[in-house]
Length: 424
Image 1 (cartoon, rainbow, N blue to C red):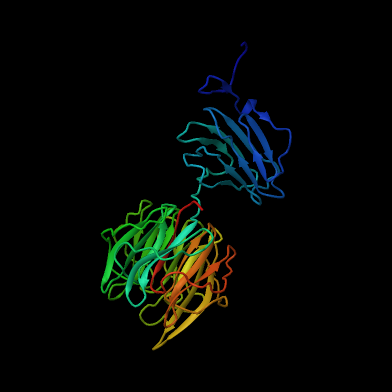
Image 2 (tube, rainbow, N blue to C red; image 1 turned 180 degrees about the vertical axis):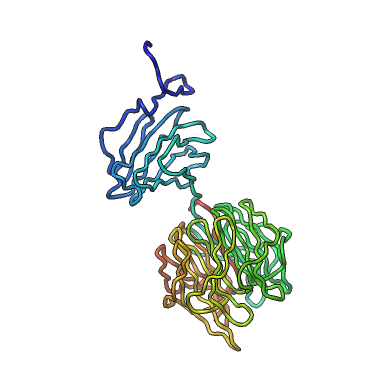
């Protein structure tokens, strides 16, 4: 070979890979909803009419390079989705979601090795971090049917609740649960006749582990939510008095010591994730009656001061995420000598704004639990109307609550629920 080779990268095979200056630019403007990309090529992507899912090569060598350009500055309306096709992308496997959604963006990627996989050399917006895939399955666990139980009921990715699974760990009620690590869950705290702080981890296949010695103040009737994409937080509750302290949970399921509480001390509240990486605690009983205040949780686990409440004040309600980035609080009661049960719901936007009441669907009740499932849907289950229930109500990915589904498993209340597994 004669002449000068400039700005090129040597593949591990010894074949010289073209760089951006020498890319083979595809002459066709890509307008379809899918594209199978080839190394060494550049593509103009027009998403005026639809999102485009781009599948990268299933095999690659060091130095392979591909460039994508937003042809009509429409990626902010219809994004591109990168399917790394079995290879890693920025060190994450292909179960992670990789999206680019900025108008006028260009993406220049090069393959490094099996560990880091495809890496962006540049894009004209801020660097993107892939987000973990949403949880697909869920489980309800623990509670009381007149006697304390530790049994669980798995929920598949279609929202079907399975029969009882023999319980693991200390039977208890008035506990809380949340997802962590992207595909696992944790049950924590509760009441066994006295308050406890033990926890039980749940694997990404739904197996509940034995008790882990508790960290933090023993308490019951608290709430928990995920935050930061892969961590969770327990907060508030009752220790003999009302508290607002919190305990962060790492992405490996380790519960941290107490963090001084922010906001109104209370118990019998609910908590849920929103916006993909944040959370919110809301409602509950502050000792002098039910409240509707909320406290937002940042993506670093910092709890904010009280936000003036929206919707009917109540306690012993439940909450779950839906639609990928929104949430819903539902059901609950007001107790004043006797219980008044509700089936109303309050939606939470992807910016954490709690909406006014939506007329309830399904049996009014309290002491139930809720969790996300199927990636973008939710389910309320079990509870109490003066007697124990095992009915459920599914929530669509647009936040519509369905009518009652005949229950499966032991009727009970004062249980908890959380999502697990990134595989359907």
